[in-house]
Length: 396
Image 1 (tube, rainbow, N blue to C red):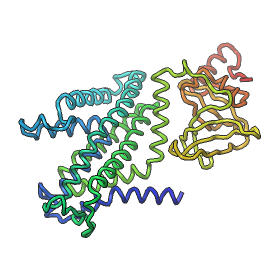
Image 2: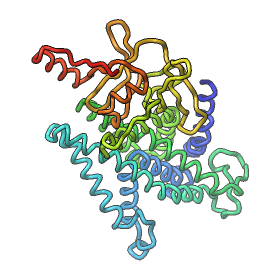
Image 3: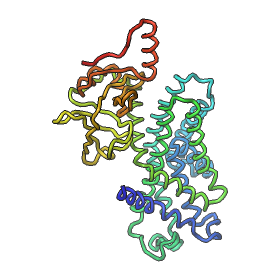
Image 4: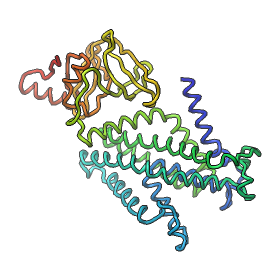
């Protein structure tokens, strides 16, 4: 744990030290229109704003640059500053805002469908917007150069004394900008995931309001105080870096669920005979919450969970505590539960592709009971009351 915290601290210092140093520049120089601080702050807040809402951010920046440019210079602007891109982008953003503003007028089923589409839109636009972040990073590098010319570039203007980093140039600013963009986008993207999985309209509204507030603050604050804007951006980046592992797991969770539901994956899915892919529903030993991995039986007949940190590192195995495990059959997705006296604890969330395949999953893991949960449990109880029989069934 200490190593992970130290690693996050190093990453945070790497990507925010120039930002904080810029904010510490003399006030007189900072307020000048052509100052290093203002130019760098502008680009950094633009990158952060784009990361929070890629389509709105890149569309807004593109429209602003098109409006500020002279008519003869507009054809030479970047692709995102051309009307063929930012006009449809902003119209799509307006449609999403109208959907969110409709509130109770839109049925929940339709809202969730639109939220699902917005989740995929955020993924696609996040990738597209990366093409705008790189040139913006190069613009930050140009802004940090003193008036003496490219060959005399130092970082003294941002608090690094007189160290000459001219040989690094673009190789420094581009990774910093991409790290800022990736960390903030990942954290912002989890809000879309939480909106999608939340069953409560009030929670959806609160999450959308929070996202709008963060985006609005990044847009408005630079016009009020550039120094405060840089410090606020550093706070957003810090939070994004600290919560990056959680955000990544939540993003993977939302992506799998969204894909399974949108593509109706359950109709083409065939469970394996010896294991099943699942997400941890709680912390299990060293396994963090919402980790994706495989549940299976080891040679001793114990249930084990095999997972990889960030999906790419060496596989790790966690042996589950002894107890009676069952399948909880839900309406949207099913779960693996552990019986604890008269209650149950959710241990794993099965992806929606497993819906309708609970019998095969139970057989693969050697589980002997399938029990309805959630809305299925309510319907089963109602049916049992009417028909006078129990709906819980044996898997084997």
